Length: 534
Image (cartoon, rainbow, N blue to C red; front, side, top):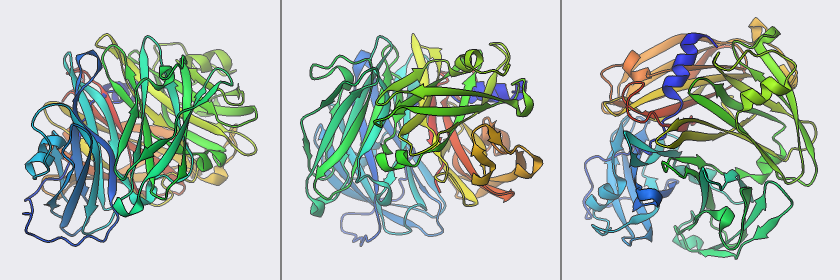
């Protein structure tokens, strides 16, 4: 990777600030009627609460209306702790995005009876009058103050169609002196859907040990957290994953995990993956794997199946001293096991036949994984840097081929550029399905190149403020644009981006990183990972 791209990556991938961007416009009064028939967006948790190690978490919320019509919003807050369940109404103009620093304060201001003191937290369902998702989107950042700034995590609101019904997994969990892992489950249905019963099974990543927990009955909108789940209820695991199954009821559910640093309380959000998705995950792309002077990426490989698997990998990054700048290696992962490779670039250096250069050179690129037959493999990564006595990091899952952006456009919401926050945008061209017959046979010719553009929108005005055009990217390559609003729309303090392909074909992945610190080197530098939406 050249020095410029290394600098961009270091400046931006890792700032784990839990900020939310939300839409708060002129509030509707309780006497105003609102007829809502459209699908809702489910937010699994918003909080204002104390935590471990003197942390205090608040949730910042973003609502984006990229559509061409003003929208009325119906909020339904269900308290998990602290009380205050209730509903409220608001509206958001067309093309606008609004950032609310503390959603609990905001909901209270709209008339929801959340107490003024004590810890509060719960689920939030937002139902727009029109237009429907995906033109309405929600992003949440939940953070805590730490020395020098803030640290935390980011997650998106989930449209009704993307909620869970079948079994799912939460992978990459660990419990040790450095990290702890919590798991949370929610009934994402409405009152008429009734209760559901969820069953959680905790698996050791190091052995065949498995423990099924007591079934949990959840009413609509309710939330249940399992703190330090790998060592709760008599367990004593350091490496593990969890399977969630709905055993009765018809309401959809959601689940997530948070891996938190024991020293600085920074969290990394772990999204669920459906069991059915893993069965078809023969080709997976981890958007970025890095090794720089500050950052290192951990690779997570989880085999949830009953048979051993061999997965072939190819790491593609500038600076690798081989034709095509890729390094190949294979990993055998036993049935039911989970392998976490702390510094995967060093692992590749030791296990690949290609020369990739010494530590300190700076590498950032994509990792492709491939296996034959039915899959049972989860792939993910955690990229982190030292800070505040521990590590600041972000978790992200691999993209399964066919689940990325085969259409021509994707959107990234909740971006900010101000005194405390900066945002980066990254893009990965993952090529066409026909370009990869097996992981070691990749078409890297000029014909695999695509050209992209990025439209930038000001969230406060709803106006398009700039267009970046002519971004050329070969297949299976990665690029990151640091501080995108500061460089290309300096008057914009918060906004969103549309990424689109202007020539070429195949799939691509786009994501944003919201960083703590208006400039590189300021505040904690912690990053929150925001995956693009269709």
